Length: 361
Image 1 (cartoon, rainbow, N blue to C red):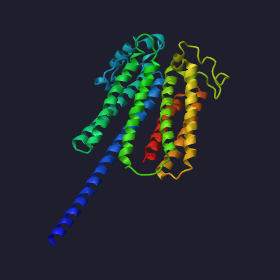
Image 2: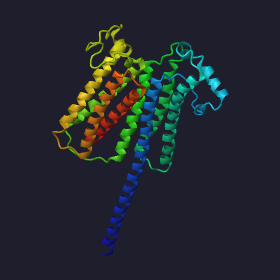
Image 3: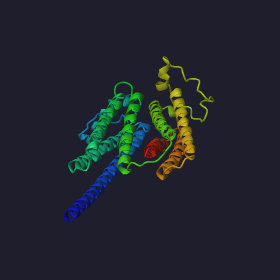
Image 4: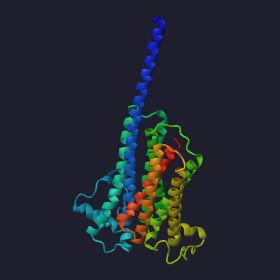
């Protein structure tokens, strides 16, 4: 009698130990997810702030890159005079802002300084908790390479940001639209990477029979929205939003007459204001139409509640984003509205990532 009773106690002890292990593991996963979501919120903020910096012409106000001591702003008049003297040697001052005084310089400086400071803050908010979670054993071994990759990508983003600014500090006071879009693309990739891993930590795998064609369409739409965001980077880089401020026609035409004036033809898609804005319009309307189609097709099926909520949120985000985009164009790109439109793109992508994650279980 003692033997079976002892084995039963052992079995119950293993069950209790496994339950305690899974409870601790779930708690750790939730903590990691909250940390990643905080980082995501900060990344979204810096993307919007970067758009404001671009729209206000502030991106070239800091002509030096000091990753360590650059966190300290000018604290006295002498410091302000020093950095203003450096700016007055830049092409932007000599070709665009030649009449700017110190007060005007301060207004653009604070936007760029805040943008760089927030970037450093994101690095700290990511690195310090990561080291703490790593030392205390709260990160599963399989996740460590992903977190290391996130940190490396963040460092590369800082270098890419300075590489972008350098393009406007040589002769032409204009940031390369190629470098600007690359900087935006990497920021969006980092955001999506962190958010996707956070979703995996928050939601355990589930089994449900979502149709394969809905999963495929959701994946295609995610890629399409990402490409649309990149096309928006070229719109911002060329300031194409200040041209053709009518909708749906462009200068009275469905297709602008100047769409293919550059040679070779491929340059039009990246350097021609008419083509770049036309492409952005077409991609945006394709994305919106695809999202509406996904939502309508999903009504035919009995989907889990989280997927259904995600699809409703996705449709609302898409409608809002199209409204913001058209309004920004018609009103000649007011800064608050344009910045909201840029943030709306990330909200739309977030909804798509959530739908993709949950529709796969």
